[in-house]
Image 1: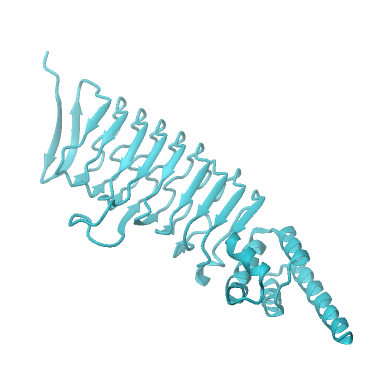
Image 2 (image 1 turned 90 degrees about the vertical axis):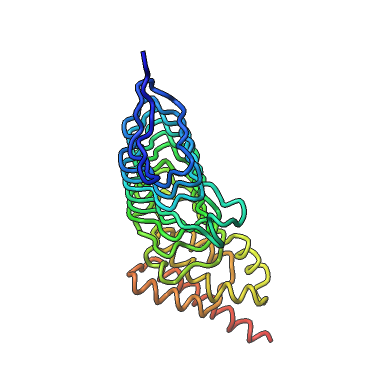
Length: 318
């Protein structure tokens, strides 16, 4: 009996893989630049796919419902992962986007760009490890990782420039780390429904002003770590140049973020334990009034009153 296993390739584009032997491990031929729509859709036995670094695009639904696929490594050559490309790959556990190891003629200089399109990894409900490239500019579009319910930790590198509508909605995330600046475009629903989210870490002070009113955290959070090292240094030596830069540039945004997240108790704790410049307090009071957050407004005005009272008493003893 002759078994039929072959790739249908035209002009370096892979249109279909045909197999009657149910192969579990498949290697895309070197030289293919595009895996076309539905090329491997519903390939039930596929467990591992090797994609060479000649491939630039993975088109819509290319691997949709490949229910046995367990591990996926995306080469740095990829610029686009199409709509629903890996939707309902329910056994996918590990997803890695490779870095460019060094400069070469194929990739060119600087960051490469990759767009993860709408619903690309929707309902990959066993995905546990997700590693993004540190050398890429990454755009994560609508519901790209929605309903990845076993994904617990997410590190977003500095190259992530877009988090679209419902991008990580209803994931099992407990910790999210922003390694760089907030994305240039951030949709407020990006992490909606992440009911287990406990900690968000911002490890860079660069927090664009245009995003501060779009950013919304969720009340399930019990800890926000915002530029922890910089904040601690600023409070430890408030007269230093770096501390002044933090107070006048970042602290106001920190208060805004806490207010938007409903973390009044955290604001109260900061006011009780730290000396905050009055200029910042006045700016945040104005913001609280604009947002009609009267509870925070009262907290800040009490802090302002006590500070002024302390200064009056201090002057009398000088």
